[in-house]
Image 1: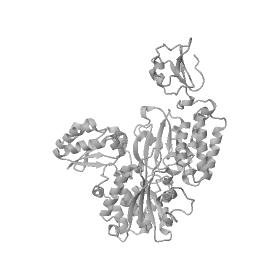
Image 2: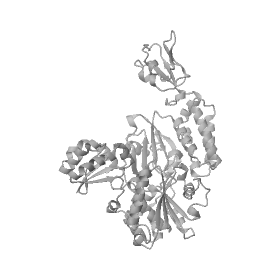
Image 3: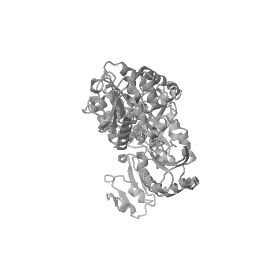
Image 4: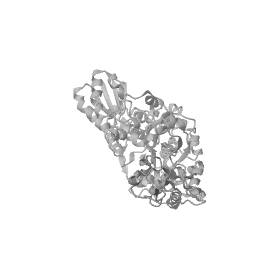
Length: 590
């Protein structure tokens, strides 16, 4: 049977995949093919993506498809003249990007219909959970995970088996198992894509984990800003319950459990375990001191195990292929694979999955294609607002928990923002710090006050009002917050500032000392001048200025009132003689 599969993750739908699907649907009764939806393949920069199958084999992968291509696609599928749509086919270079990945967490993304449990089962779905629940003891399940070496993919990298073992050993008959889907890092969308594209693998991982620790209640905590993920997740839960995979005597075993989905209000701090728990309990999401840890005393005062989405998506593969097979991938201390979300000034934005130990350079250039437009790469922001900025010279650092920690950055959940030479590192540090300061729960003074003071200093620096000693003050303040904050988010809140000072201190000092932005990005440090000997009195700059800050001065042609100029670049874009220059401090030598 011939089939047409249209990727419909958030990225695909935003690019017009819904219109493509509707157009193909209108043509389907006239043509002999099956039309299906799928999730995100990870190649977001090529969306909408349409896969053409003949029987079980992929015949063509079409990219950047539009609704007007539907008729040609339908005709090609019906006639078997696949070459008629070769002008839409993926390039060998882009196909190679996918082939070079090792996909475990993303193994089903973009291939199966996330709204059809039958499609998931046809690819071996829920077989791993059945094996665990009916063929292994909880202790054997924990042992298999220990063999795999799987560590938490939410950022901390804590051994999954150790967390499960502690939760299982905790006293009490009531226990909870929670999936943390509160992904809030700027530039990160791994969890969203997994929940949209392969929700059943996440549910299957939860079922295995709940059985291992003896939890009768399972909760998926996902942010409400992910409406498509929430919709598909709830549908997946309904389908799994209808099949008897959750409920009394789940999958025909002696284990019984129930599951429900909870939507959070979108507070970044709720990604932290204890804050997530207080939010679940109906209170304001604020971290709690540890110990006791959630595995000892968590939700409703009972032992609670929390794993993130990507961690759980790995588990079915581990129980299908064996923990040793997972451990054979990656490095000795960081096993398996890691999913990264490539964003920023990168040529191929989207999701990639690579073995642990892969150098950052291979991810950015080999898979990401380098910077958009080919500009020199300046830095990568790794680990979100709690991570750090690493310069191009450190891109040979392997993706490994210990190796990244030694640089001052961190693995984090997997957001990787690429920055080219046009990025101002002082402004970038301020951007992430502003986010952290706004998202601080305010419970502890070091985070509540320290992040605001650091933001104020950086705002002063990029505004041209930096003072001697500001860089040293920032460093001292950052270390104080790191030492005194209550939770992990607070303790890592100033990492972007510390790494910016560590690797780009000269650039920050230039803002302070010379009132100059080396990247030319800070408006307050840019000065616009009209060079008299190049000006031809065409008046285009005068006409284009939205604030009328250009005036004619006798003997000097035109001048720009620096106090009124809003640095919009309109005058430069309209000047046909290149008579207007932008300087970083000082007047031109003309």
